[in-house]
Length: 233
Ligand code: TMP
Image 1 (cartoon, rainbow, N blue to C red):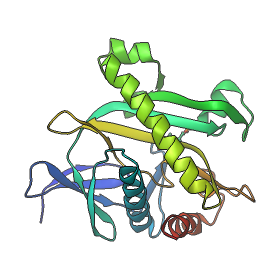
Image 2 (cartoon, rainbow, N blue to C red):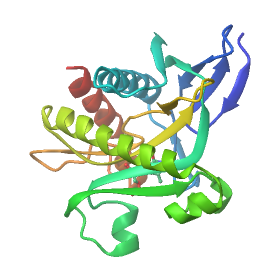
Image 3 (cartoon, rainbow, N blue to C red):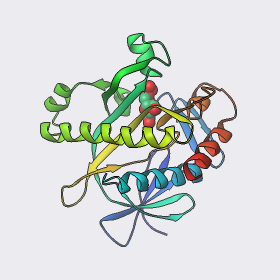
């Protein structure tokens, strides 16, 4: 049995024979609101592993370096081991979620241009929104590297927005996490899935992401399956 290095809310990370690689097993466990709401979404681990693998391959094909090496099981991806930045980048094309509550935008309002926000990865502080100057003060990301992360996030947004538009889905917003490999290269890590994105059906506006779980909208499993089918389709 490989050594478990870490267990998060949605994934388990295992060591491999290669010190530069780790295996990521996606779980069916679902949490929301800082882990206060907990349940399981049947088949989520498999759906999210497959969706992430597909989207990482799409990004690689478009020149974005990602953590993905290959999918090794239905719910497991072999990935480069990264030293992760303690910052999450959220890109928003339309207003939804926390920005609606925080700044009073109307849900569904399209932003003039995509917005990039930074959040501190710290559960004990409830992952607060932070500014570039906070990031600099706390030494979380070097200044030139932050510019690079922002540019990468906007490029990822362009690639994913175009891809999903072609599949009848509006990419409303999403969260990215980056890290550095052993040679110091900046690499996109973590996952891209209905757990970490908001997807709305382009025709009906139906929500096809974790908001169905967060707000008890029903048909949660079906939403994840629907995204899997459209991504792989
Ligand atoms: P927010 O509107 O709650 O700030 O979420 C913005 C995006 O980030 C949304 O697509 C969901 C994703 N997200 C995560 O991936 N992890 C989280 O812990 C949170 C709160 C949001």
